[in-house]
Amino acid sequence: MYELVATTPDGGVALQRLDRAGRPVAGPDVVPRSRFPAEAARIEAQDGPRWVWLRTGDWYPRLLHAGVPLGRCHDLSLCAAILRHSSYVAEGQYTPGAGVAGSPHGAGDGIPHRLPSGAAPYQDALFDEVPIENRPAGGFGTELLAEELHSQLSAVAGSPHRPRLALLLAAESAGALAAAEMRHAGVPWDATVHDAILRDRLGPRPVGTARPALLEQKARELRSLLNAPALNPDSPQELMRALRREGIEAQTTRAWELRRYTHPAILPLLEYKKMARLLSAHGWAWLDTWVSDGRFRPDYTVGGVVTGRWSSRGGGAMQIPAEVRPAAKARPGHRLIVADASQLEPRILAALAGDSAMAEAARDRDLYAGIAAAGFGGDRSQAKVALLGAIYGATTGESGRLMPKLARLYPRAVGFVEKAARDGERGLTVTTHLGRSTPPPSARWTASQRTGSAEEQRRADALARERGRFTRNFVIQGTAAEWAECWMAELRGRLRGLRERGLHAELTYFLHDEVMVHAEEAAAEACAQAVRDAARAAGRLLFPGAPVEFPLSVAVVGSYDQAK
DNA sequence: CAGTAACGCGCG
DNA sequence: AAAGCGCGCGTTACTG
Image 1 (cartoon, rainbow, N blue to C red):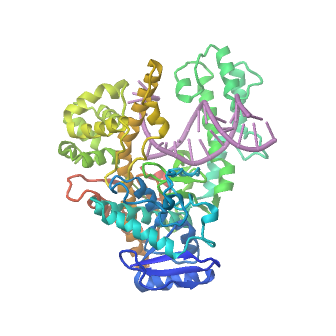
Image 2: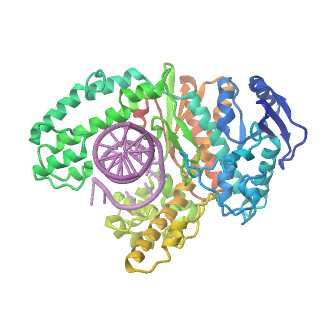
Image 3: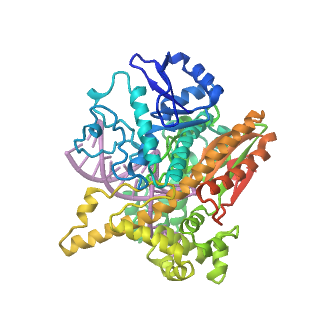
């Protein structure tokens, strides 16, 4: 059973029960906005329907604020974005927003969907294309949304991969709930610990925009060592000129390039860059802006990456550097359960390709060691470089040289990624295990492939290879994201069960192949077990019966830095 | 002067 | 060491 939520022209909330096919079973009930949380709580307690709405972010945060968590939903916008490109949906079977009168889709005027220029260009807001004058006053009501749901469900029902596609839409929607819940909970963040780290590395917080004392000291040291009394080390141009005068012919001021030179100024310069980075990216300004009430609350964008990975906005939630992780600290009486999937992407490759030899090697907890033992004379680093090269499409260097060897060892796995690469180079789309496809190549890309001059041909070939590397990686990264989203969805349900037993435990952070749970001491071990159970369940959901396992490393710790 | 591109570096 | 994939974001440098 579905419970549809929509806005009414006068700003109220329309709630309507739909059957399993997405058809209304009764007329909508309208409640004032203020009564929505209480009404939602009542309906949720009654039979826990699958809630349906245009965007989870429009409704769920205020329910969480009112203390009304929900179990399941169907996020029409996220599901539309998947179905729109999916190769698991037959051509012409589904058009996003086709039910909207006057929309470019409905009118059939041939206007291609423009990608909205938002933070997440791959994630369409369903009705963004509808001209303002054609939008129903007060928003999109139950009729339009019910029709959209029905057409999405029909697309799934008619798919040759119905179970996979249904799983993907359910997982993506569960992800949307989890994203709102994690923002609501926030990562417990100890500003005192963070400040202590900054003081230790940079000196006390300066007034205004002055450099902190230790950073200024480092700048003075640099000016002296480079014989450049007026040097501003923050300016790449000034820095480059100063380095040149000292005979350092670096092409860029990147740390890895500078490291190749031996000059007394190099080490202090690298230290300066590290310190300056800490200050600008995770200094006091970051703390002021993104941490409040002892919590860091990033805004996750589900499906924000073309592969289906999430992105985030605000505070760089997916780039928390190791340096400041001690500040992510469990509250008194609580613990953090931090878990990550070990070597997820190569394991996904073994499962996707059905490569039993690779799966056999992956039975080792350390997959790279297993593969090294099987064919790289026990050299783990060689095995790792070779495998990552296969997943990313390396052609040069050590990784490129090892490819033939890897291909002899695991012809099915290597053949699988090679096919994805060749398809991409030819302009085809490729698809993850559960059914997320790449968008078709851009018109510019396609035009570039019909070329004349030798110079244009070279450029076209380079673009084709570039797209091949993208599609090669897409199937792996995208399927890994699906596993991780199923893992999180399973975990979310299990944590709910713990809370019903009176144990406080909340999902607080998610990063590609890693989760963090904040739980009271008494619940910590049960959480760790829930995390492991959820991973097994995710493996069975994606690859039923496959001999591939997805081991985790799980740490129960006081602060984030203590994990791993 | 505002908007944008390029750079550089953090994460998986 | 980086390379080969995917991101966000702060700063500097440039453009209109």
